[in-house]
Length: 194
Image (tube, rainbow, N blue to C red; front, side, top):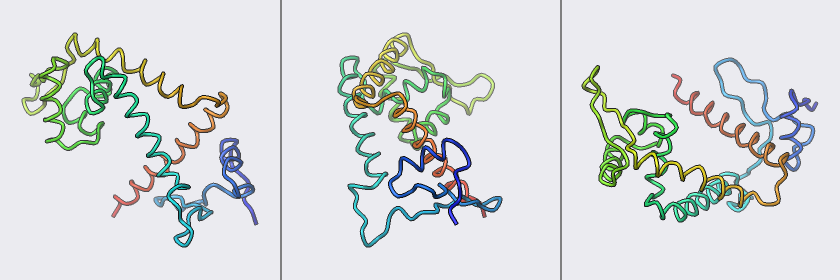
C-alpha cells in the first residue's frame, strides 16, 4: 500500500522525482534512528555518475565556485579566502576554531589561510582577554570592503545559472536540497551514536 505524503513539501518532492509519485519520501523511523528511503533510486548494476545527484551537485558547486573566484580576482580574493572572509563579515564565526569548523578546515589549514589573509591586510588575530587560549579574528577596514563584493558576485553568478527557472522552480529546488541536507545531517548524527 502506498503511503500518502505527509505535507505539501513531500508532495512537491515526490512529483519532482520521476517514478516517485504515490510513494512516501521516507519511511517512519524508530526514535533515535535515521529515516531511510522508501525507494532505491540507485542500483549498482545500472549506476551512472551522470545521473547521480551527488555528481550533479558537485559539478554545480565547482562551477559556481570557479566563476565566483574569477569575478572576485578583481578584489584579490581566492575561493579559499572569500568563504571565511564572508563568514566573518556575516558574524557566523569570530574565533579561529569556529571559522575552521564553518569552513571545514583543520586547525593547521585555517592557520595557514589566516596567515595569507593577514598578509593581505584583510583580518587580524587577537588573543581573547578573557581566555588566553581563544584567538578571535577581526576584519580590518580592507576586509570589510572586500567582503562587500562577495554577496554581489554570488548573487549574480547563481542568478545567471538559474536562468529560465521560475520562482516556484527555485523554491522547489531549494526545498529539495534542504531535505537532502537534513538527511545528510541525520545520517551523520546517527553514525556518531554508539
